[in-house]
Image 1 (cartoon, rainbow, N blue to C red):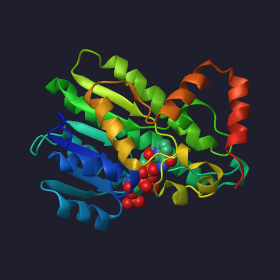
Image 2 (image 1 turned 60 degrees about the horizontal axis):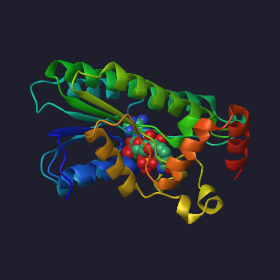
Image 3 (image 1 turned 120 degrees about the horizontal axis):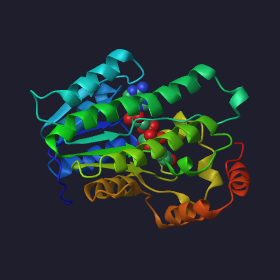
Length: 260
Ligand SMILES: NC(=O)c1ccc[n+]([C@@H]2O[C@H](COP(=O)([O-])OP(=O)(O)OC[C@H]3O[C@@H](n4cnc5c(N)ncnc54)[C@H](OP(=O)(O)O)[C@@H]3O)[C@@H](O)[C@H]2O)c1
């Protein structure tokens, strides 16, 4: 069983996929949890499995939902939260002109606005304590433009850039900030984001499982790394994309994310 330096962790999107795995790994290590998502029944299952789990049902697309999570992060009357995991997020595949603009707006509000507000709440609570951890879930999609996942890739580019900047800003404060950048991971993301076709388009070796992604992210934030890119294949691809001319990287991405 892994040992982590956290006492109490708040995880958004803990009802499914990567966030659920992060919550499970923390719970198994004896870390107290505040689990956040809209599906309360899934969160109650986590609460039944581990000691010291607070269920916080919240829709991060509503002002009330977002405020309730910000308030819990700042609350000094309960166990202070020393790890915040901004994991809730979704994507939308297709050509931009064919997609519902309200859905795209919500994607930006969840992946960018909610993550920024909760990061702000986390660091303002942690800096005076001289200690804390923030793990923001981004994606390898953040490293180049993503035709047919245009808004999603752009939101994740924001997450990686914002998180790397915070990592530098908070040097010396005792607060550690990490962007977790997974590649393809089998979760509910594919059905929510209409990318189920990826299951047949990409070979098995391209797929990560949420358990290894969660482990990698938790280890990286524990050790104060700026970026976590789980899986050798994605580490290699990210290194190559960093030295590939932008135009070529764009064309390759366009051919890789095919219609499905
Ligand atoms: N799977 C991949 O291939 C992949 C790759 C790279 C990065 N990621 C990123 O990993 C993160 C987790 O995704 P996943 O793959 O684990 O997908 P997932 O299984 O669909 O989980 C998404 C989580 O976000 C929560 N969520 C969605 N909308 C919400 C809202 N309005 N308010 C509160 N919670 C909300 C969902 O809970 P409720 O529905 O119960 O609210 C769920 O727990 C995302 O940020 C995603 O972009 C995924």
